[in-house]
Length: 250
Image (cartoon, rainbow, N blue to C red; front, side):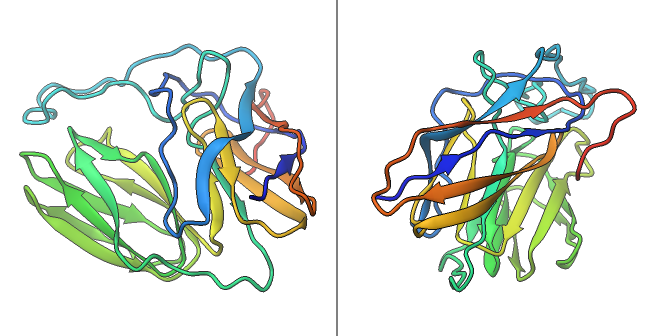
């Protein structure tokens, strides 16, 4: 089994609120080549921002059930691990394969689940409504076709994504609902778990550029080295808040 080594970096970022997820990170495996584990970690560098809940109008949340009011835009563990960081590695000459079955993005208790998801180019996504009230799926792509449709109770809207993209998704009925769908031109990727950990399986030996993206902390890069024997030492990748007057990569 191949392992990866990540060299520490620091990226600019913007302020946001935080909360913790369940300890176990969710799998991000769509093709069998990529999964989450504790080989690498993305951590927050600096003083943690104050955790504040979302402000939700009770009139607009009627029928949602118990709504999770914690802000998902920046999720930090007690140790400073950053959840929902997208990690991608493109390997030249490797064919990108989409999963045979559609991938699910659910609307449940008036939240999108998962909050951040990554799929390879060519994937078909199902936008499902598991709630007892109607929802809307409104996508904001840069390259793929925009989708803006009502999704009735128990309904599903389907879309094939053929272009590399970063898509924000909202529900116009419930303004606090949003998620990010990353369409990657690679099968080597991961989304960090609740403790900031991740692992990318199957990379060939050599040096590879890893790209990191977070909705509030912006972009970062690192070099991944895979030796012939797969022996590595885990290294932390750091992302931090921008200073006033500074900028960050989007």
